[in-house]
Image 1 (cartoon, rainbow, N blue to C red):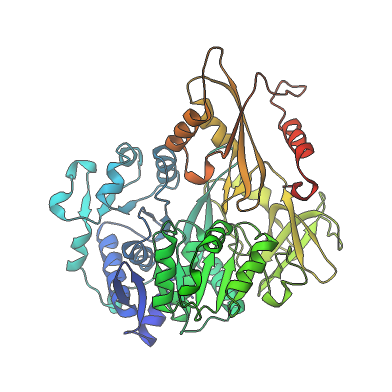
Image 2 (image 1 turned 180 degrees about the horizontal axis):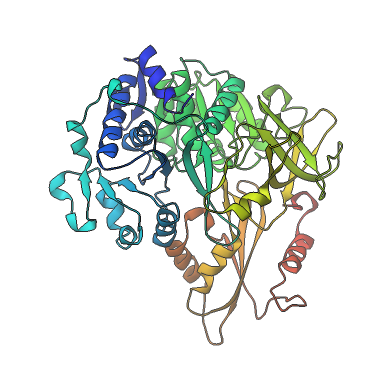
Length: 527
């Protein structure tokens, strides 16, 4: 099975069913399938061939959904790029993966004028704007989205050459060097993950799922893929910035599934007059990115007694690792459950030996959902994909420290490396430090994670100003907003005359972490 089969099968079975609701528009499976066929035909007319990378640079939108399926139908590989990406990272990604085409709109591209010329492999720029508004000087080959209307929309005109071990998508995540890593996911990887998740969520065609998470975030992307797989309806929102509007929409559309992260649920639980909205249709709630505080688990279950709450854990390299059955919440609220269907997990020591219950070690994942590797980075790939139990197979070493109880339930302890997991994203301290060093007046900078009930970890920056520099928190915050995506901006700044150094003269982050940990209550330690 290929990923686009999710759409095509549902379009055959349920052609007139509403598949997607966005900003007042309601599109059927048949309409989306036909438009995706036209995008595929347009891409092929521009020389896009099997395995070529095509980037999608939109806010959550109908065009973004149509584009990803059109790219798949063209046998190409899609990249969903965050609308928050700053020019340096956007340029790096496009050039690193050799993107052959970019689908976006004029407003987005105007904000990053130097990016398109730096993408050396780019052969086509497709913009969702009227031809008259498009500046042809943006690229040597600029195409208006409206030109798809002249393309064939029949399924008969689409001939796929891909098989399920071919790449479907590359998802870029933060890397320890500061540059993002491209996680290569095959059709098999993504179909397997979607199948396992929809199995334990017990999804049915009657489900109506609301998604407020960005499609560039794999948790948001999979809401599209999974809903189209089981033939449900997706209510796609841009974000959760206006929570009352979202809750109103949930009530109006009789939403049955609500995926979120701790920050979203914290806002939801603080809303006044929540009871005036009829949310009785809500069947399940899912949480990932960071563990929900136990107090929030209790509040959610009290507020939505009819809904099953799933705590989950995952990482982009395999999408999902585990889920906690809702009936286990009272017994072990701090667990992220057991491995999901069609997957095996265990814990190892530094030598790769399996560990027994209660012993802390690195979590290992085995399954068809495990990525192919990192794009163009075999060395880093070999560090995380290692030989498995069977000859010739490789399993994923997550870099996350866990312990397992006697019944096989796992509990997150911390990260092996210095990557910071916050707001569901992994942030490279080096990337944040590089941004801080670019600020005028910064002599030294060091970044570490600090405990945060909602974010999992927040980012704290230690700064040594240059002599005479009158730096303030506000100045650095504004600077970081220009340089970094929102989730990578430090929450705390601390100014010092000097930072501790180790024997080699490098900034000693372990000393900073130990100092911080000594100040914390016992319950907040071991971030």
